[in-house]
Image (cartoon, rainbow, N blue to C red; front, top):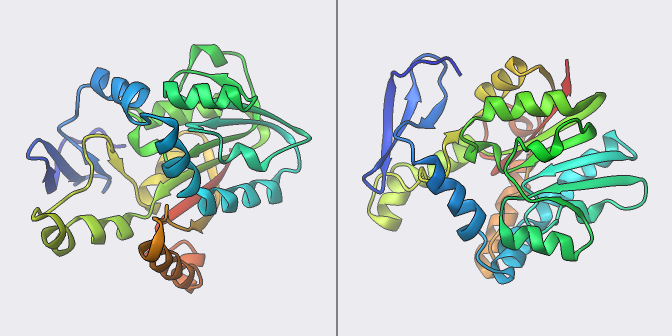
Length: 273
């Protein structure tokens, strides 16, 4: 964000990956970075090991949040072309039918094959991809992926070059305060006997509203609105509790105005400026 290397240490994940909050711009990031070839292999071969995990973790658990995202998109755009970056098994795309030209980008071998089986046009690659050179879209989505990209600024700049003048970008991130309270401090100490269990091995950035807005602006977008989203809920009693807490938080004025809150996820809707 600001090219500063200074900052305050938030915690260390697995005694290897240092999490730092920048003293210049306030961005929280993994400052001792994993080797990029290792993370690429992880997402291509290991992150989604089989269709069982694909359907459970990127289908069932994500269904409520992605249905809400689809509703937001359809309220803005009635039809057109869409690029879904990090499609997994196509849960988001399943909400769009006639009038939509859908392209799925997915690095996971399991996910890409499932998308093909479901009839989607698939780019089996990381983003930005040479296979998309010259392509433009009315809608570009990045659902829960921007924080794992080694160069999010480069990814957003690439998206900006591919989006039509009246198009929209939809970016989902985890709620910063929600994640911090659950994964730094007393809660992880009780749960796992360590100060932080933020997964800094694969999550390279921990954006909040301020840092995400600043990055979107830097990359040629103007923020239209911020929408709270439900969590990726578990199943059984724990999932019911998660959903009920999310429903309450969703109605709080601070959440609806986009101010800091306990919402589990946020959807940033932006226009090319």
